[in-house]
Length: 412
Image (cartoon, rainbow, N blue to C red; front, top):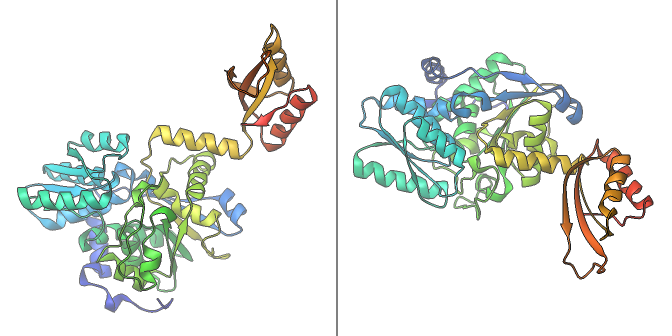
């Protein structure tokens, strides 16, 4: 793609700017205009102006509502709708179906988020937990549509759906017209195709970067010329973008409109989720945090002068997973410390250890005894401590204090 080129004549008529604006306006009664939030701490850390497009605050918790409403509205009178989805598209289609008074069925992977399944059912849809991946669920949904005469709504590979997602791009450039770079998560490519289609027609000089989870990344090779690319895995905390193959509709659009596609590690995604929660007070799922993950892991070159808009595409994450990620971040930052040591298996042995911990001003979260180990003397008991500290320096002080007191404390 040549930055600055006027690509609008090559776009399908469904993605002409006038139509995108009309689709966006038609959805205003159901779709929130999500905020663009300044992010001073991220800007300072990254050395470039950063803003966050908070689609995690959208109704149903993700941008997917925009595309689902656009498709159902454009399809007119139908008997009902059906889709395959990991959760966000399913919730959004269920919401759209309820909005138009239609029956809705969705096929979700057997290991899909329990919270997402519950949310889909809460909107009145029938959930079929079948298939090992989104791709399998899509095929099951297509078969069901043919069998029952329902409208199949693809999660991304559909021009009406893409036109709905373009609202994200329209809002960004209306609210922040000076933006220099847009960083957008990619699963099947529907969101970035819509954002880029709108953005290129409004500001052809923008830089647009897509981000995939490296465990399930098909677009980098596909846009490099390998047309038949299937990602080997869909096991990622970014389940919302765990799509194994680019779409037939979306791949040409990404090739034409997007400057670069990068990948991010699971570790970077987890860190981004944690710091969004801690610094910005935003609950963002793995897929939604991929844009920030790319920035903090230096996978994308940020514009040092003009705002870099990171699209947070969704916020539907299980509380249990979020708690694990928060605990992991605390450990990485030295605020959560797990240590193993030994104490005398006699009265007072544990009390002395805990007194040393208290003297070091660490907060005890859990303590576990380990009595059966070949490394223990018959008069010893192993102990595993989980401690809360004030940070890495304090954690180092706690270790040193335990060792000064005679405890051979090692990280567990």
